Length: 324
Image (cartoon, rainbow, N blue to C red; front, top):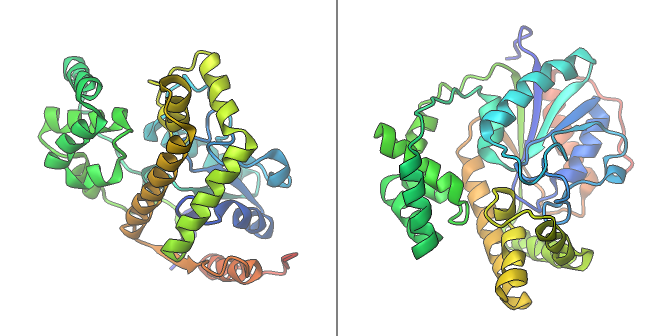
């Protein structure tokens, strides 16, 4: 039942390449939305191709937030995302618009939907340095295996290349004796919003084919030149941003001499694995209304299914008609 004392919040999630961006624009038109990017990489300026960032033309006049707001050498975290959304959501409501989070970074989105409280267990710089040295000397997979031994759920969620977050998860266990995943599961998960949470899903093999096609398109659009330009500007590979999918693999080609074909195949493999982890994360979230968009050519039908869920949740009557 809708609580009139709570502000409305619309959220669209799903794995990479499932088709969130195109749908989100039509949804935003239908419900007078401003979009908040729920993607941990699209905040970075100059990282456009590898993040599949929406272009100004594709926005079609819909306001977008948390895109191109940081330099690649500036940190971004779930806490900063949560803080930004706490400011943006009431601002958007104040303009008479509906806040609409669109993205695939599960923890970021969930932290806002349910107002997670992150306990600061502190830091142990010596421990961090030891773990970084372990990764440097023996490889990221060794560090990731150490996390899997103490916190299998966090290890499943985090990519071995996401060294900073793997180290932080190990550090939390080291300092508190409690795992990161247990801390997340202990959250109250009561939303401060009238939440309409929609997830897009698709036949797995079809999704993987779309991922590979997207990466081919990224290569044709100049991903290698984008990564080269970032490296030439001094954005080194140890930065969080440069550990992102697409940037790490192409940087290995440019600086380590990895054959381009091998780098692209690795990127495709790792992106498929990333999509699988995204789906696993979202499947564990409550309150999601799922829409299967395997018939992605039937855009109008998929849009109508999403619009019906939103209208039902927020008790709205719609006169908007899609151009599709």
